[in-house]
Image (cartoon, rainbow, N blue to C red):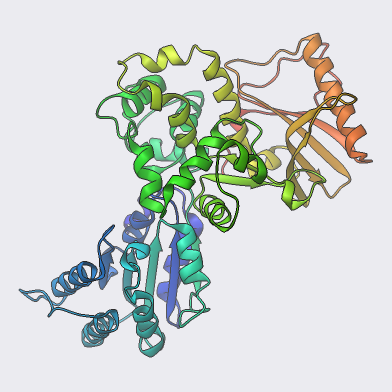
Length: 480
């Protein structure tokens, strides 16, 4: 099977393969951001076993979607002409069930409906038709129905949490994420492209783990050369991807873009109230929906500060490409073949690299916990922020691992191109951070100071007795 060529996706592969062996009808929902590999996953696992497949057309109206459905159905029934013009989705799904019944296939029937949010255009009656198809026919058949969509929040609201005929009908769910660092390394190894891990990390920081973006990377070139070509050249895939990305996923995407741009300016993240203020976004249901949609789609992450209430939660921009675009590409596209080399010497680069490395560490918490030998201990992860006043100093900690064994890891995450050497001032700052945290949090737990960095720590008189654990880039590349 072609599935052996897939990078990662072990759990997702198992779900799809097990569905073929199941003795009941299966409806599988697959949710994941644009270009993360949802269609490739389904087509690779099921290969020639798919009996009917259709992809929604973006911005198309009901009549055009139905015409497309008829054309695709005509292909599989070997008709020289499209199926007669259909006027409703109930009628369309009736024709589909007739075709599937006539196949008399041994083993599971497989139907794949891709980009469901586009198929279900406004007031089209698509979801009613799908409910009719499933409840009146498919649920009694030996069938796997795969429904797929990039608009994650729409899929969850309209299908997964459907209040009508599709309520509780989904039997298995897959949430497809971008590749981890380890999976990205496997991806390039499969393509016979050789990078060391520092080069891989630099690429990941700029474009993330989205497979379609990684396909643009060429062998025989450094990370800097590839970033320059993909992100800054006239024909680079990611030179103009940002404006298309959000408008392809969300209705009224201008609000989503405003939120993302506001978050891109603040390293620590923003509370909801701060987003309203700095992003000039309206308070209310529209903001709540937009935040939920961005979270479900993997562009932003919500973090709950240590010891604070939900209303104090912070939102951070954690999509690598979006941040890279707003920091560098937007103002420097098409500026020449060496532009990224020049930009990487600036203070803006240093600030961006630190923030992005922190976000990548937060996405690889399982690897960090494995390195600390605490994977088997229940723990919660959070940030800590206390605003400074006239009387008290401010304090910010980007990652705390609060463990059930009466211990807390305070994690310092530093991106650097060599081993870190602590100075006397560095050590004093870190000691003060621990003291302030103990004072403000009033915790009685044992504190471990953990350094997470690229090439590790060079031990000296300032680090001994202060740094308890060191997690390196090599540890972040461990398989989850």
